[in-house]
Length: 155
Image 1 (cartoon, rainbow, N blue to C red):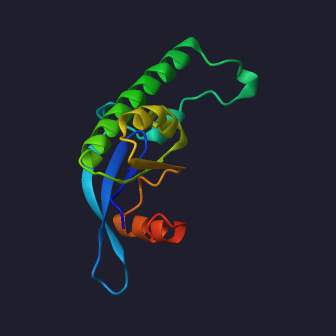
Image 2: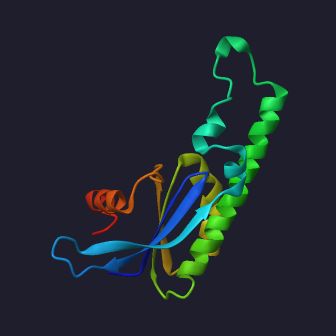
Image 3: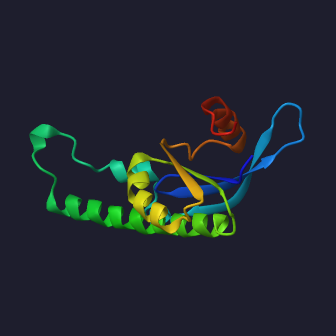
């Protein structure tokens, strides 16, 4: 198997894994956690990505979002953008010495959109980028391994 790095992230947390061969007869590969990042801005306000959605105006009859709500949303977006930059920096450092390989980025859709271009520009051309817009950040390592085998990420 070629070198593989898998990033599982949401706006509050990111986990970076490398894939290693396993001698066990039950599984071919295992995930080894290389880094675990936490967004301090999300921790400080007391919530994960779900907390960011709790005060959005979804009532169509209530009118447009209040200006303070819009400002808060822009601030949260900037916090996620900065956290996405940290994730990209860590991922590029992890795969920087590889002469070939792939990086699989699995993130909630909003964070994926914020990270996509920055990561494409930062990676060497020999490192292939795969993307999946899912939020798997709350899953355990064993759940992730099982899911990745089912989806063909770990083949």
